[in-house]
Amino acid sequence: MATWLSRFLISAALLGMLSACSTGPARAPATLYDQLGGEQGIAALTDAALDHYAADPRVAPAFAHADIGRFRRMFAQYLCQVADGPCHYTGDSMADVHRGMNVSETQFNAVVEGLTASMTSLHISVRVQNRLLRRLAPERGDVIYK
Image (cartoon, helix red, strand yellow):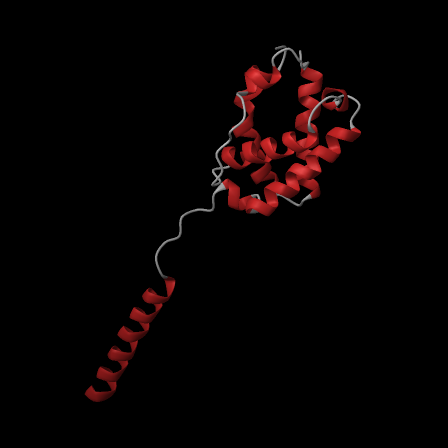
C-alpha cells in the first residue's frame, strides 16, 4: 500500500510540475499595434480610410492638391506610432499639417467616421477601435479651425 501511495504522490508532483512548466512565462498584453494587425493591418486600415475619404464629399476637397502617396506614408506611420508600433512618425505636428486648412467640426467628424467605418470593414473589434480613437482624440484641438 505504501508503494502505491508513493507512486501516486510522485505522479501527482510530476504532473503539477509539468503543468506549471507548460504555461510558460506570462505574456505581455498585445499592443494596440498588434491588435490592429501590425504592419499589414495598419497598411490595410490606411488604404481603407483613404478610400472612404476620397468618396466623402465632406472630406475629399481637402485632398484635392495633396500628394496622396506621401499622405498615405505619413498617415500609416502616424497610426503605427500612436498604436505603439515600431514606427517613428517623421511628419510635421498635427497643428502644422492642418494650419491654414480651417478644418470644421463637420469635416473632422467625417474623418473620424471614415476611420471608424474602415476599421469596421476590416473586422476590427469595437474595443480596439475605441482604443485607437481615444489615442487620436487629443489631436482634435490641433486640427480643427487652424
